[in-house]
Image (cartoon, rainbow, N blue to C red):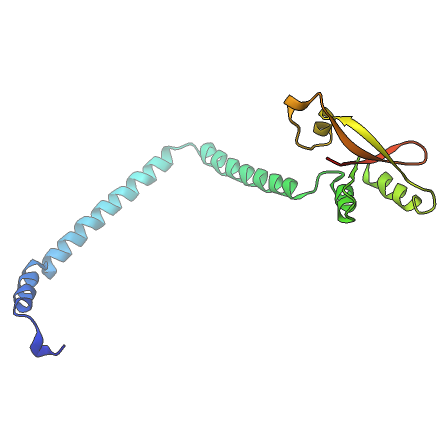
Length: 166
């Protein structure tokens, strides 16, 4: 589009728009008013702060710091594994599907000793309500039914882990 192709209404619109534009004096007056209003707001804020007790400001900062500390601590706690979860991971990583019922240290010792002394697998039927104690989903309407399971027993007779079969 060249300069010769400008529509006829464009120069008229430009002239009309130039009339709406404030001149330098109007700009200066408006700037002075806005500056006065801003200074008045700052003065009101300063007087409001001076009437506010100092202990209240300290309390606000202290509670903010306390809240931030609490958030950090709770986040750190959520990132930590619950006790025994590593034993459960060790058992499931091996692909066995067993849920350890003893502390991790005892479970690892039993598995290490299991190479020299046999660890027994015993089929069993457990009441469904036992699933809740193991941290598994539990349907209370089927509490009377049984679940097929396999128990991992230490040669001493101690139950080390359980595997749910159905």
